[in-house]
Structures are given as C-alpha cells and as structure tokens.
Length: 163
Image (cartoon, rainbow, N blue to C red; front, side, top):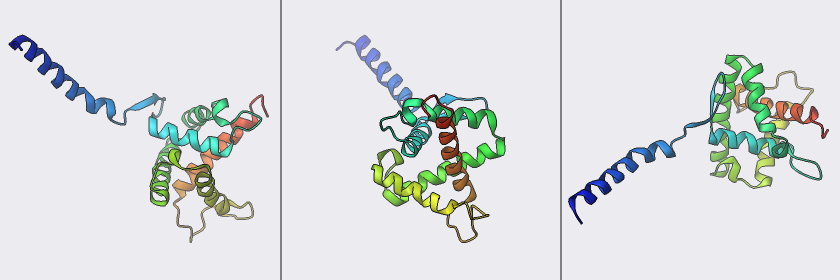
C-alpha cells in the first residue's frame, strides 16, 4: 500500500470516528417553538397514544397522527411551566417503565403497557378531589404527563372525522 492510500484511509477512519458519536447521540429529531423532541420521546408518546386508542376496525392513534397532535398542542397551548412539568414527568415515566419491566415502553407487550397505564387510571377517579393524594408514590409531574398525553390523545380522536 502506498503512502497516499494509507493517508486517505486514515483520514476516512478519523472522520468517521469523529462523526459516529454525533450520529448515535440523542439529538432532537423534531423542533418546535418552545422545545425539541428526541426520537425516544416521540416513540414514547406514540406508543402511549396507540395504547390509549389502538387500531381496531377504526383507525388508531398512530393512523390519525395523534402523537403529532399531542406535541403541537403541547407546544402551542401550554405554558412553559407546564411544558417543563411534562418533560420531567416523561422522564419519570421512562424511569418507572425501566424499573418495572427492565425495558423501554415501546418494547413492552400490549398487556404490560395497559397494566402500567391502568395504575394511573385508578389514581384519577372522578370522585377524587385531589388527583395526586398525599400517599401517592408518583409525582404530580408524572401524573400531569399521563393526563396530558391521554387528554390530548382522546381530544384529538374525538375531533377527528372518524369519531
């Protein structure tokens, strides 16, 4: 191998090594006015929405793009403090899933996803005045995250032409 080819190959290897961490990091894939969203965050909201409104004989949340609706409404119609609480709750939700099932929400089975979401349903009974009772082990941000995703998913579905 001559010196020119060796230098060319070395430059290619060094350039690839420099770019690889940038390609595999959690760079935002969606940019909104008030925040950026990573691929993992998009996947979590997509999977939650699809679990809340699955595809049956009618389109599900994924078919209707309700995850995108959640992001747009969060960006356009909520206060900065509520957005911060949403993202904090999202992080806590991801940690809870990993602690409970030792995997990401997207990798959980349908039954595992439903079981996890039902834990938040039992905490939010209509007759309860405080949705986050003092003995609740989950934070108000985690409850706010779940209520926001569920509420906007259901709202988007009921406003669609399929409802």
